[in-house]
Length: 332
Image (cartoon, rainbow, N blue to C red; front, side, top):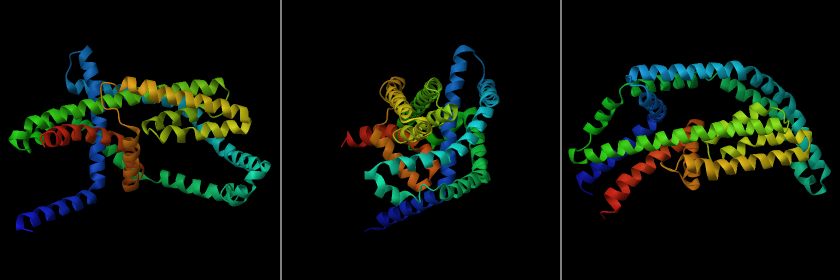
């Protein structure tokens, strides 16, 4: 090995170590970029109707978002609080119901003996209290979220200056390629955010309406969880379905079957019709790519890693197509 190879190896190792040490800073920065792109999409929509400056457009966007959030809080928060309290009451009943089902099936007696301790509410409740205590005392998470929002606002106020910084630190011969790459990443990320937001809202409304029609308890809470977890494809919708299925099981097995059919219909509508239709002009991730990215970043960064996995995969997919495939592999 010559000195240049050794220096390059040491530089790569140092950069990797530095990146790992600053992973939470990079997480906040990338989260701010994703939110800034979302703001920018709304700003462009407003400017297409009204010819006003970016600062005023951003003020309108923030006002609309805050107003919409307050309206939803006023109308939905009391019901969500009541349903959350009801969930705490229904959870022990659900565990007892599952135990009774296991007891009634001879083939499941051994299984019932092995998991009876796990299904004990006395064992589960302390874990839930620990999780709630952790969530309630997570001031650091709230601070990081507020910092992310502030950074996103600063980025979206003057995106061109930040673009110029990224472009200026690249070799002159590659600046045109980097400019095109940034434009493609912005378009792909903005399209993905728009499509997934519409898809999540549709899942929330359809699930809420369906559960109300079937007279399933905790309909609003269940629908809200289903809508939010739509942003976590592959594993999110299936996980979200556990709550309405469990609650409906308390009433009757036939109602649980109806809820299962409802959720399967909505999931297939969202996965095979709505999402491909909304994302036809942008990056549509393969399920294997989505799941692998979620598992990888989930192991490395926990829940925040799962949340940013898909937007990061969108950006990386565009970058690999533009740089690795066209600039390297095609020429090779």
